[in-house]
Structures are given as structure tokens and as C-alpha cells.
Length: 119
Image (cartoon, rainbow, N blue to C red; front, side):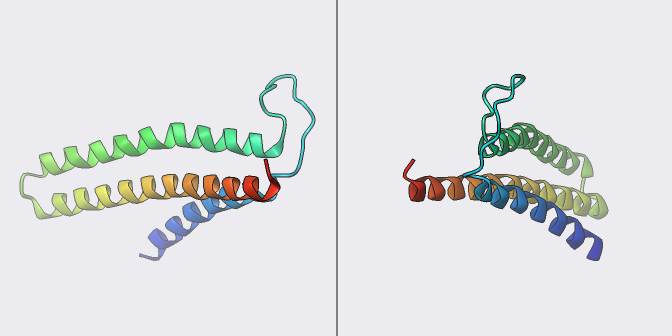
């Protein structure tokens, strides 16, 4: 149980750090990079990283939800297999919730800072 809580805390903390660090770096500027000309500031870089995480993480979470459904189908009434399938489904949904929640928090922080800065 402690290992599971540690994993959840680590994942949640890392996504929260990405969300909050995006707001702290909003006013900082970076020099223009010739390799990636669309990224001209730290907020643009962090937004690009979050977009990549969302584009990769959501399909992976969907695959795990499908896998949990497959486990339910193949359990055939076996209590231990059903318990494992339920556990898989719960953690897949928790992972997707953390992923989308971090994106939502980052977007809300960016919108608030944009309103305060008048941009």
C-alpha cells in the first residue's frame, strides 16, 4: 500500500510541478532557437512539452483501459482475476485523471496569468 501511495505521489507531484512551473516562467524569454522557431519563450516550451505528454499519455491510458476490459472478459468469474481487472481499470482511470487534471490546472494558470498581464 505504501509503495502505491508513493507512486501516486510521485506522478501527481511531477505533473503538478509541470503545471506550476509553467506559471512561474510565463514572463521569462528565451533567445530564438533556429531548430524549433515556434518556441520563443519558456511558456511556449512548457506548453509544447505538456502537449506532447497529453498526446502520448491519453492514448496510452486508453490502451490500459481497453486492456482492463479484456481482463474482465477473460476472467470468467475467477475472483482473483476479477480483482486484478478492477485494480487495472481503477489505476488506468486514475492515471488518465492525473494527466488531464494536470493539463487543466496548467491551462487555468496560463489563462489567469494572461488575464492579469493583459495579453
